[in-house]
Length: 187
Image 1 (cartoon, one colour):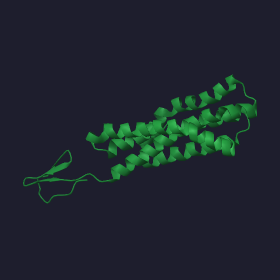
Image 2: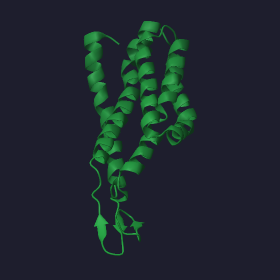
Image 3: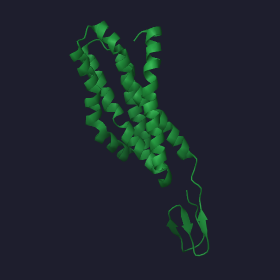
Image 4: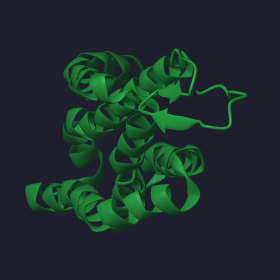
């Protein structure tokens, strides 16, 4: 954030205000760190969501008597929706801003994540996973847009490294957590 100067000859140069008298440097806001950690949480949750069904798959397959091919289609539904909506998801972030668009896609995929447990057939699971993938597709492009606006250029690589590490950690720890939950509560 830059402060205003009283001089008539004011120019902005990369994080500093240059006047005919002084250069006033502003420290970046700490809000960017909150944005970073919220983004890490979103990335982590998206990977957790992707892994849950793989861990629960044997029980789902047994309960519904699905073939391996049917399970393959159910798994593919997420990827199809995700692939089809990456670009539209990024456009939503450009059109409505990162805060509103990311809030919308998080709500969207959260609803379909929860709805997965209420599905009653292969077709309903396919549609639910397709819609889930469509919603989650916007998460990464919109979050990257937010980081590019909030992080200093010198911090962007570091910030993206943290977010991607968080995503993979979410995916790595989820199978153990989900196996415990399934053993305790069922799928």
